[in-house]
Length: 172
Image 1 (cartoon, one colour):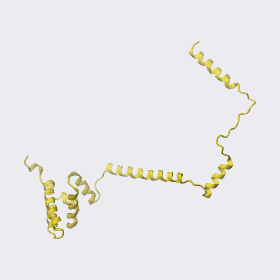
Image 2 (image 1 turned 90 degrees about the vertical axis):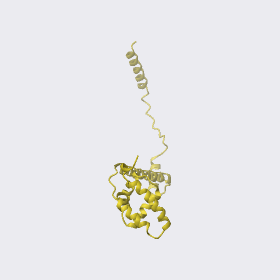
Image 3 (image 1 turned 45 degrees about the horizontal axis):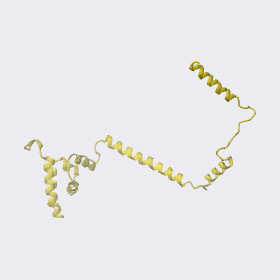
Image 4 (image 1 turned 135 degrees about the vertical axis):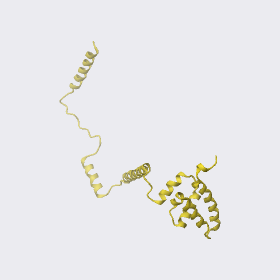
C-alpha cells in the first residue's frame, strides 16, 4: 500500500467510529460552572446596589490607570528631550550653556547670585565677557557676605579665563 492509500483508510476508519454513535441518546447538557441564571441575576443586583466588596479589583484598576498616566508622562518627557528645540527661558538657556563648560555646582550658584545682584539674565554672563567682568566686579564690591564674595571672586576669575580666553592665543 502507498502512503496516500494508507492515510485514506485510517481517515475512513475514524469517520466510521464517529458515525457509529447511537442516535437515540440525546447529547447531555452539562453545566460545569455551577452557576444558574438566578445566581447571575443576584450578582448583578448586588453590584448595582453596592453590596459588593471589590477592593482588589478597584485597586488593580487604579494601579493600571496610574501606570498608564506615568507611562504617558515619561514618554512625553522623553519626546521633549529627544526633539529638544531652542531654549525658551533664561534658566533653560543657562542650563544648556553650562552643559558645554564643566564646572562645579558652587560656581553655578555663584553665577546665579552675580546675575541676580546685577539684575541680568544668568546666561548673559556666559555669553559676553564685558558683562561678565562688570557684573563680577560690582558683585564683589558689595559689603554683605564679604568673605564669601572674596572667595567667589577668585573662583569666578579662574572661570573667566576658562570661558573667555582665546585658545589659539595660548602657548602650547
